[in-house]
Image (tube, rainbow, N blue to C red; front, side, top):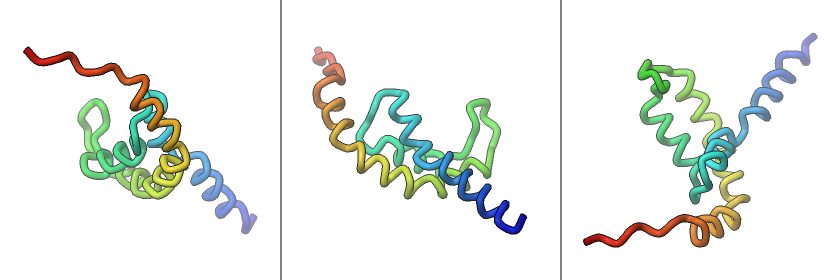
Length: 93
């Protein structure tokens, strides 16, 4: 029983690790998109319905270094996607 709480905390941390990066990959990869998502959530921790949520900011703070590590590991993939698969902007008139 004395190892239950640390084990659950480690499992939760593992499941939440890189959450911003996973969301970034689902939307279409951007360079360091997971870190960008976490920073945005820390600065403005509102839910989609507009209500304020401090736990989201806390989770984003915990997730930030994990997303940074995962974003760095996925950097070659996101760079390829960014340069080859992102549609070019339409020319201005």
